[in-house]
Image (tube, rainbow, N blue to C red; front, side, top):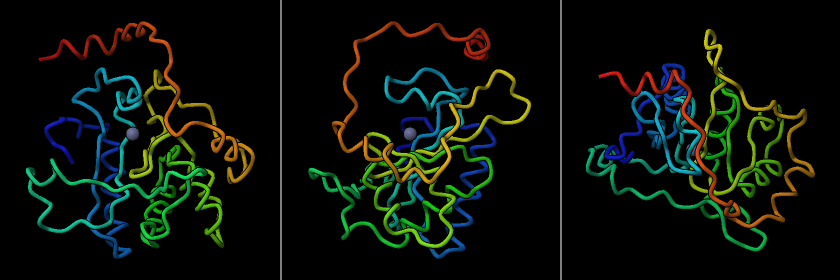
Length: 214
Ligand SMILES: [Zn+2]
């Protein structure tokens, strides 16, 4: 989506995930997926709050299951909106008129693809999953609450093999996450608190070298 942003570039591992997820979603009878930001060519700086999209290992998948063939032109993809699945509250909660079985199916498919480290969603969506998922719940552990993310999920891939300078984030604690760590989010503001601006760290030398390539 929004091809003009030029953020549809990712590590082959991430692109493979997108293709794998899309094939699994099609098999499950879901509509064509809307894929949001991955990264810029060769990574590169992104604004505060979006810095995770610099390594090619992160991709936003919209939680919009209403794709139509008419949406596929590049021009159409500039303007399609993705509605929120969350009512603001307080407390925020999933909109029962918006959240469908297909959303549950898509989140489960994403969290169970190989190579996925974690899937970030709004705390209200995580809470809803905690309440409705029956049977195998192991995948719920990978679905983590974060600010925003009420209309898309953010998928982070584990470091690819053979990338010694890649660092995975701290491991996810054991359990399904339907606990006090989730409850904490409901005491937080709906958007992240503004941090005092700090200088950005210098780019690693390997990244600077990439930026010099023609
Ligand atoms: Zn994201």
